[in-house]
Length: 197
Length: 413
Image (cartoon, rainbow over all chains, first blue to last red; front, side, top):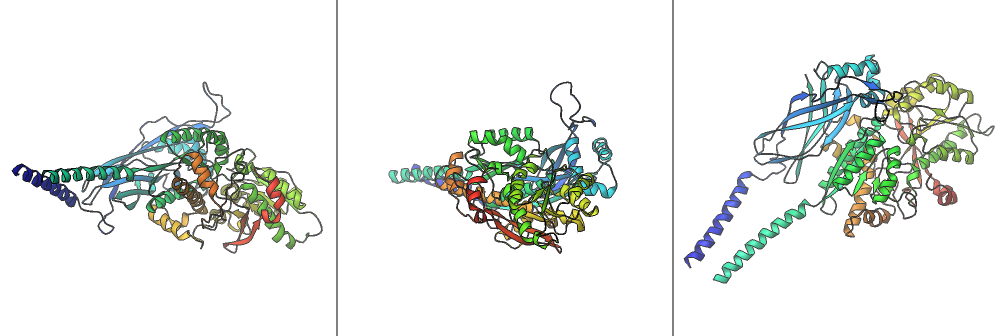
């Protein structure tokens, strides 16, 4: 009888501890879900291949000819602080990268998920790249009015970017960014924009 | 007492299992892929489309997804390059997507044999008529009237509404010239159809003018057109180069009206074309961003909620086009899932091909797909930029006007 009683008491104790643990983490509601804080910590070009471009008319040593230019990989490190008493899930980031503030060179996203613990700050690294070809396309299309307005020519601008972005003599902007956070089915989207340097 | 304790313990275990499995059920998800252009030759219209598509799937998930199953939407930029699109499609397939939201005509047509072999529903932003005959492309779809229907409808609207107002009306044949990038599968897709239509309506047709999608200076093409003296020019490119062509036509006093495909007529055309854009006429498969139509409030609220950093004044009709394709796929998935068959064939047969006059709102025509015809609509709304706003010029129904040709002759090209 004593053993049985001990077993029942133990089960009640375990259940109480489990429920208590849940209660202390706090339940997210629309009212108490505070927007996480996003900060751009650093920017780098992780691999640099200088500035070059080959038109499709140029025969390559190996492989197929094509309009191809140097890659410019870019890596952004963000601090993501969670001011809530419960963990939040960073579920995706959509963002645009712009050079010289006005020239948008890529809009992209990541769908990776990161848990940010309650009242902690985590770091999230986001990488993307553009090529001379893709940037040229942008300068001839979506960025054409801005290019004309500044009186710049496309090739000169590309060379300036490819030599200037790695050492940040050309400003790099993350804009139109949306960091999507989730907590217990609730969604909070944090807009973000920052320029380095 | 012993039995009661055993009972309690059994109940405890059962509840534990129940929680564990309900967690698994909640984790069920449907994977959808996206192949978008945010850096390539159509990025001037592709970026807004890509953002709009992402917003649509976020909204869909907030509405419970597909019968409670969450949609995991994963998209990539492919820079409007066909090899990259093929690579990204293979990646998406490896990731286990059940359907793809695609983009351009060149890549969609290049991928068509593959997606049809894979039985992968492929909803594209290419509305090429080549993708509408299920006998050839059974897994290709889109919500909009196809490019050939757009071209035929735009020319019909001009012929009905504008030609009778010209001084030479009744004295000679109207003259049509086409301006587009010859090498672009998108731009060249409806050329055969519009010329067929022009011939049927009694037009004289001039030489085509090759205008790059990147063109900023089209004076030589305009000068060549001036020799023919067209009454109306069909523009097959996207907004940037069409705006440039209209500016040059205005500056060089070409004196023609301008009709265009849906990827040229958007909110940026008057911004880039200025006074030269006055009177631009085009196919609009859906409403412009913010226009007062059913479900527009959802689109605008979602744009504000999910992309708060993107200024509202930068949003375009491309967002609406993305939503329309997303909503059609959503409905197909809901139906296929209810039928218990989320295979490619299930999504196609029990989903898409069960849609009859499905109303997605957003100013789009009701959508119907049958096992023998994937043209979603039978005509197109034609709008005109006039007096600082887009105005309805005509809603053309080709099937109603030419039922025999629509039924027998015009499918698939």
